[in-house]
Length: 188
Image 1 (cartoon, one colour):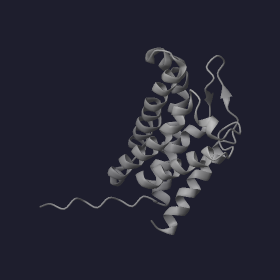
Image 2 (cartoon, rainbow, N blue to C red):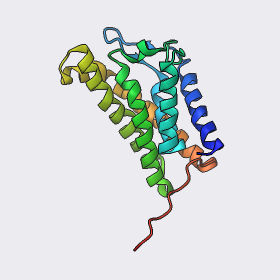
Image 3 (cartoon, rainbow, N blue to C red):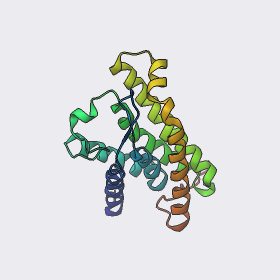
């Protein structure tokens, strides 16, 4: 890992902290905030790639775990990572990795449609795939009820965030590609 990689990982962990400055919007009765931070993994994976994007989210979660108030609303510490909604935060690491992996694989022909699809698959599908079962387990509600309570209201906003992230990823890729394209596989 180069110094440049470390700086980029730290930069995107800092970007997540900046996205946390926007105050959370609480949906009455749910207890799960709508935050700008859910766009961070989409940007990290799409711009940095799988390894660096995933590591940037892992660094962010570690900083929150040690007590830094980096989550939206100024929350931090282990207590902030043990609530019913915390699975969504842990999903950010996997989401950034998956989005980055897909972006690396389709780097040569990455466009807005691909980038949007990757952001939706990772930033919505993976995050909800981790967050909803976590929410169900800690809330003691059936999985389907947990999905309707913890995810359905957030899907439209997350799709908008995926669109914004896709546009940014494609613009950054064209202006200053941080992801190194994958070398073609050698034929035997």
